[in-house]
Image (cartoon, rainbow, N blue to C red):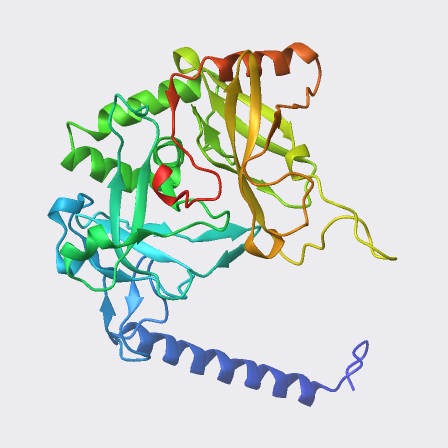
Length: 346
């Protein structure tokens, strides 16, 4: 035994030899991996074609976002995918597209999500430039002529899923796609991005909004069941943007019988759809739809009913009054019929 050491010198030498052997084997395996075509990593937006095949396939290129110019090669299948890499005109790097995300969890696209990405602008005399975005049209086949017979993918909230103009304009994650859109659509997207940026600057918004943006009477937006309030942004006269918090009193529930808790039992996130309406000098909240499993006898108010807008002023009452005045000054309206499909309204 060496003085001051709890183990013998022979055991120390054995440990040193073992360390040398492990390091030598690691160095040899690293050198072999570097000299082969098989890499142990996958670059962003690159998909391995076959497990351990050593071959890599770049993401599928989307040739156009205009419905009238779609090709069969633009047809993609997103079913059950947690993400998809969109490469418009071969942009690099491609942009990661998600269905939706809660915290760090990416939720997969629903089954039978196959079709075409497309850009949905709106006629300028009907809706503002900042409205719209890139959507996904579910179609039965890769024949572009089936586009008109398809329907838009819906979000978790039951509204059309889209990469909004606000996201494209304000989020750095979409910069490669934004640059590619600007390059190949010089007469369309620069004007859209400029108009969207001007609206966001009215409240110094630097990131894409996390709540619905409402700009018209009759425009559906979502209210989550079981929640007391709903946050949203409104865009009124002059393109001024404002954030308001509404009370969800239109979704008041009837008490249950017996010993159960009052109201309805929410097992997962579910949403109703409402819109702003106007009657005389009053701004109303009109109930457009509720989830089918809550449609009968669960709510105090029925689909089609309306209540005066009730807002939550976080500091002073005049803040809510400003929002009410801005809503009265909406320059646009959308014809929505309570109880009917809202897919084509947005």
